[in-house]
Image (tube, rainbow over all chains, first blue to last red; front, top):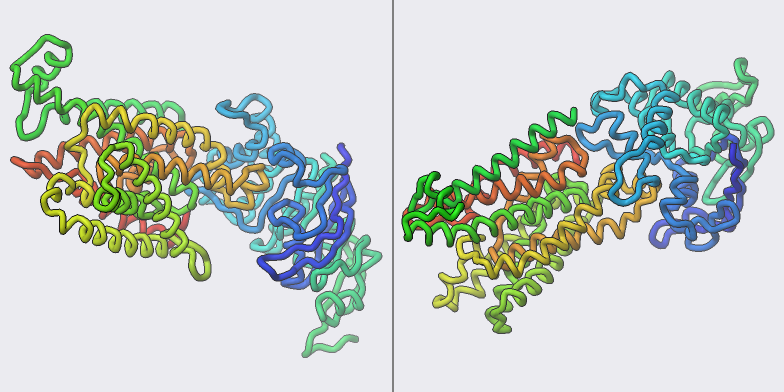
Length: 266
Length: 332
């Protein structure tokens, strides 16, 4: 279990001239599951993308183990830090196995094929995600949940200690959402992988996250464990939502119950 | 797919090339029996007139192989870097752009050396493809297959008529330079081969080196970046190699369309989405297609010849429509 220090230092970022992230400082807890929550358009995806060097901050730095991520050679950074984007592209007709093999790109040297370590990493990733028997199937034919497991397996084959995921459960039904989050928890517990993700569902975030970052209007509002920070006041501030917070009867984590216009709180 | 099936397909394609080469040496305005060709090639001699005919058909055939391979690989590169199944040097306007610049060079700057043609063609090809791609990117959702096809067709048509406009007043040279309007490999000789080989070699080497990065790029820009691919550099080098291959070919043979569209598509259906196979196979397939198209042009136009660019357009148009229809549903 390797410990890493991943931090944002005074990040300002955006697209074109529009500032979306306006001065965020935070440290990602090593070997934990962290979730970034916030309303649509608040900048949480942009924040994740600056960590994955998809967006270059206009000022401030993302620092990994004391060095700016922009100073790492791209392949060696890709051996430490992996990302599952929100909508990656499936090449037409590719098999599960071939797709996951592409996660080994950071370890490839010019003109050399896959070696034993590469195949072992791919097989292990398929095993953890429970998709070994799908290896020769075409990815096009898979269900949404299976497909998402394949993508996570690709990120696992990349063998990074830190894994960033941009809304990994968005297009999935509730059963698959729980399944994916369970698998990520397993990964975190067995391998100590540091997981940082953006999630929409507050209740699932509160249950699965060790640590939450709440973002609104490009700024970090509050951070802490779900128990510490989830409150009806925070929901009001971040989502402009009236709600009650009760205890999740299964996990004991905070559970928010929205109120809305047509129902009364008792 | 199993390795053995790929090997069988590979051998079949090599055999097809060999067969096309034989046909190219044998068929034309004067047909020569296969047995006699073998005799001539192995130095056993034959009818002296036939020997001369075969001797002129040899460089033409070799040039056809090189040009076809270049166009096939160029198409595979363009489709990969744009992640667009309809991208092809001819759709992106590399062909007509290269043609226009060479024709302008001849008309206004009195260039007359093949080396000069190549450099004019390379500049014209890169500028035009960048222009077509930029036009297609205007508006939301970027350069979709449909928008790319439309902007490419519009630019190609405009440039095609500009080529005619520049050439029309020079009716005396028009016949010699007709291949700037429709590509032909009929006039290719050993000199052309010597000139073009270094450019193509450079292009092929870049293409092969880019294969792993392009395979990652196929997963989307974000995924590729996360895997450690420099997407800008990969795209830039890919475009450079693509324009080099197609531009150099166009400089000496004129615009030959659709090879770069048809072949990578066909190879993808045979070998799957891994560029490790598609890239080299597009070279072999392109060579095969161009040589056989050239032979068909000789037969169809007999006693004269139909330019190979016309034949590939005939073969390519239906494939183009098919791919475009499919691409509406799913982009690469």
